[in-house]
Length: 414
Image (cartoon, rainbow, N blue to C red; front, side, top):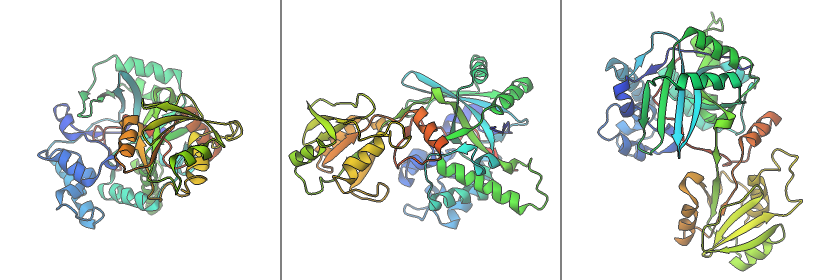
């Protein structure tokens, strides 16, 4: 069962939240963070991307950068830009995009649930990225940014969402990207007990986004437990911060591919080879969006095409074989274009659906890329089925939007 607890959140005063809050550390580079934080000493980027306080080009993994994060985190608290709540609370966090709102509970998740597989993952992690975030958690002794969980729908937790969200929020603002962010503090002991009790009935939590942050937070907690000769199991380091959303609230958007060349083929030759496994229909110059599972959108040579995978090219009984990312990776990228390593091959790039299919057209029309492939998005049911089966999704399969805003709540490990 999923063990969670409330915690004494560290967070900005209401009037400073928009100055402090930021995008997550991993959705922008150092220069972009430097520009967004320009003229704003209170920006969380000074803690989560502290290399911005050094000259451009300074090694972001230098020990001095991690030391700067600690210094800045301390300064934020001394200046009153971040304050710790007196009592342990849960928090309800709502995000609004394109008129759709999703609600998640900010909780402290139990480290052993991650280590023993009750918090399920669907992606591989890279050790270098884990180690970077582990250093950040260790040196600050805090989870500065939350991870993004999903859980199977629960009627009682939906009732609590409706009850809490009908009250006055603590924060309510629209970020520069146009997405709305609203946060309520759940202080009532009876309500806190209900949240804890309902999560205890949920067999598994699922990492939706933030696999490296999850691994880093859990591994640091396990390290602290191992290093404490008086370890009891109820210390704060046994928990890490997550925002957990009901699965039905979440919407995975498409994650598309652009490729630099056709592996020595001319466009007509490539189309002819595609016809072995796909029904190919020319759609003209107007953008064509994939209509359903196993239908793809191809843009090449100024034209859009519909590609529909033929029977036998996919396996709907296999949680991995059913995925369009598997079909396209095997039958198009590998077999026709010779791309075997999606993570490392420089001939391929990936474009989140938030940028629209027009971005695919632009990159091909510019001459940078030879073709673009748009995929029908993965569903939450597929993601959870893969995690339940113990399988791992192929790289660059899911894109969640909106991203969690960092800096609304921080979790200290002591």
